[in-house]
Image (cartoon, rainbow, N blue to C red; front, side):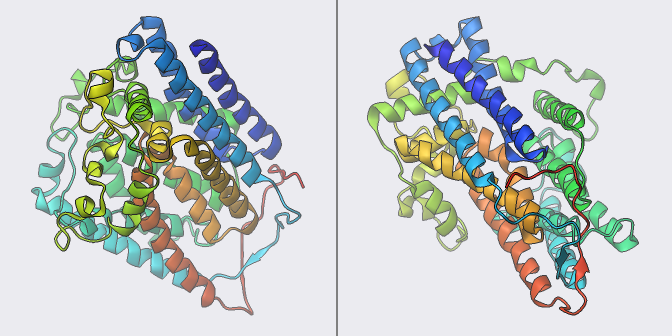
Length: 446
């Protein structure tokens, strides 16, 4: 039964991708790039551990079957919700549609956000001794005891999304081009020199997807598939050689075999750790019913200097350790402990938060991805920015937790939407700016 559920999960992922491309003919549809990530964690990993016999040293076969059932239903719900949210309405994209946007205001807002983000990054780098201090050792980066300084670096991404939007795109104008390059450098350094897969994925999706969306074009399925595989291998390479990649490091000693990262059966593996969290919470209860997610919105923005014990006082002290996913008693139920820094991935995180309501919540998340994609295609402007934000955060959604998505989503959305509102409200109504035309190859079913 366990193997049957794994193959059923694989079928859902494969069919979702095929049907999404057949129906919408858009390689940037969420069901093109999210199901492969699902399949990597919830199909490839359990099949490998099943073949090696290592999985049942952590959980029993009956427990694995239960976990895979939860996985199958949660992913199926996400896919169905995404298809429902993507349904085309009677409105179709007009090739010569006009979008009234004040481009000067849009650019000014982007430059302002970018400079603030650049200043925050510079402060964080200076705090650890400059570039050499930040990236002179493996897994490097800047630091600040003030959360607002650390997270303000995301304003660089918001600035890039505004500049490389369909309305803001001005390549190869000098000031625009310089700004895009300068605002990209901190994230490229953090991803490549810091050997961090999250920033690497974020900056890659920001630049590549925005470039095509801005020009109303799409890469071919072969290009997007090849690029996706290459990006995945790059992120695994960075993780595998995390201790070796730094300024002054000996790159001749790097390990090109990245299989160990995903095939090593440890308590830190996403599938094994997530399975343990699902089983433990099912045994002893301790579901949060939205409290962890609410804390990210209501409590996290308050500086710890003003409220030192904010998570404890709010009733979710577990957030301080692995996002609280293993607080229900992992060791008492299964006999092994969590490893600090381990991620349980999306299905386990939703389960710990909502129990069986994780299934409809997953459907709602899928619907949101599909709906925002549709609005980005039909209406452009801030919807394009919002969809790109969801796309670049998909790596955190699938492989980490809701907490990793929520605060990033809030920062990026609030900053970019503020600028968009100003750019739209001050637009010259008599002389609107023409958006680039929509290509014929993107079809919509009415």
